[in-house]
Image (cartoon, rainbow, N blue to C red; front, side):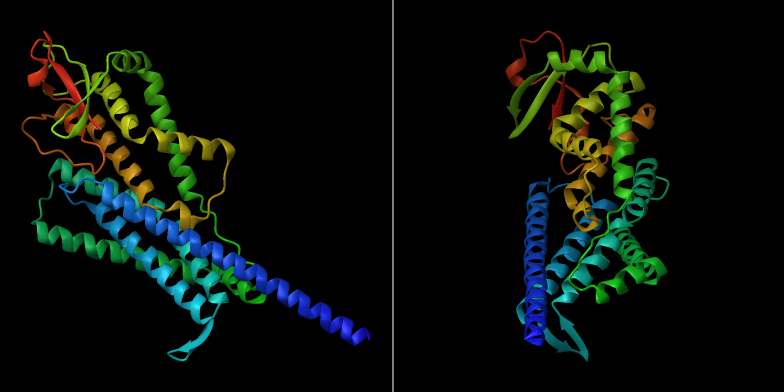
Length: 338
């Protein structure tokens, strides 16, 4: 009788573990699927006539990696237990693959941010002007090198290896890596944005109070006062800063609020969710604004081709423009297209 009770308890425990694992796998499946839909939506919403840069190509590689992960966990979820090329795959490999991806994504923030900074610096300074095909090849091999380097580090790190090995011992548990790089990068960007807003808050409020919204050439535009003695070369950082802040927040304000909430509440987000395409485009816009501010003395917006943002048209933040419907306005106006 005792043996039967022991076997019954053991069976119920294994059944409970199986249900927990199936529920967890189903949740992971839905999260990855939702992330893929978000990738498609974001890539579909961006401007199509943008100049290709490093972050553009990296976003494509990230979308491909997410899709590949989704296909792998879908196949494993469907077959549950099968052998491929002499390797046995079970439902526990779903957690293992996502753990590896989480560690990999968690260590990508700093190198991607650094290379994007170098890319924009070289493009803006025109220190090296490579042909378009050579530039694409350079981006391709740089991205491949980043993925291979980070993945090699993840699989070769002893601490990470022990964490992945423990997954085989406690298969009913599936902890995920919470990366620190994304947190500190977000914290740094929000701090810089807050300091910029505090520095020029009076100018920002003045411009916001004068805003007028209308449609021009199938785009939503914001009109701000632009005085006639201003030149097309934005040689004053103090003059440029409030316009950059307004243009940036005009597009990314909801995302900024979300980042502030995450930082204040110290919400822990798994690294495989934290590294996403909207986040990368947000970083991209922040980098472009920063490059403009540091190089304001070089900006001559009529004569030069500026880095093109897939979501923010920075050039029209500063060009004074008289529209046909506003000929009665005595002073020129500056335009922001969001």
